[in-house]
Length: 325
Image (cartoon, rainbow, N blue to C red; front, side):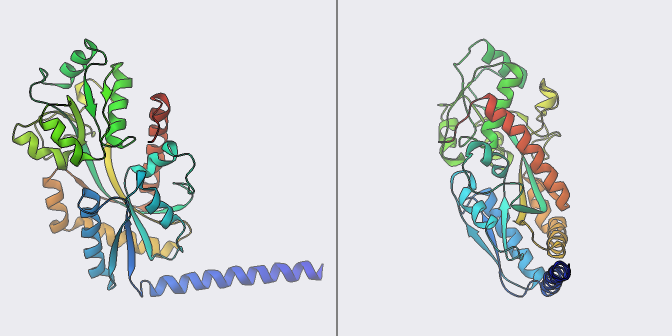
């Protein structure tokens, strides 16, 4: 009995010591540079968002925030790196919607998108826009669905890489309306654009930030945006939901995550700083003008978003029998 009591007391002592160490570390945080991993190459939207956040966080925290680009299939390398990092607030990841699809596309990955990450802050949403080549005789989503139904398997569409939210948005539309569109994969938006602009593909679903200039110039025709509300960048376009697909609501999103078990005070400090950054006019106004929506959700809101997205895209990926290349 004495031995059992001794073990119990010792265990309580260890727990108290760990809690004290965590609290002390949180109070002095940060006292050295922070790494912000980006699961995309330099030059894209995710990289731009990350560098904006890193610059402003550096100012507010008094420590350098270093952007570390780790592009790979569905962001696997970057996500795994952060999932395995010390949970002390010095290694973070700017996640995209790929975090909600990676497990369904790559069942053998060595991390769990929910269990191995601590949500910190949902920072930005970016709706997609459905576009068509100008020579395609459709002027609305209703026209496109009717045209596609009359020509099963004849129309091509692109939504970036296999398993990207743009691709899955198209698959969701196909499932809702029972249409047969032929998906054409690309390595990314940059390689897809020339084929869309030249008319080699019929339909494309991609980021409003990317597509808005081409819609304005008349090089492509915009039909509808995929979010729940109209885009400030393209206010003349209806939503997909209001164009015959009730409830359709798909947006690209960016959120900051830390490794699981990162101390709560550090998570809350980072959340407060990121929320303040996204409220700054010099950060928010240019993003809004391009059709994005700054977010400042608490960690729980980001966690709920991830859970909803995982559930939605798991069903779409299974029903469409999508396999990662």
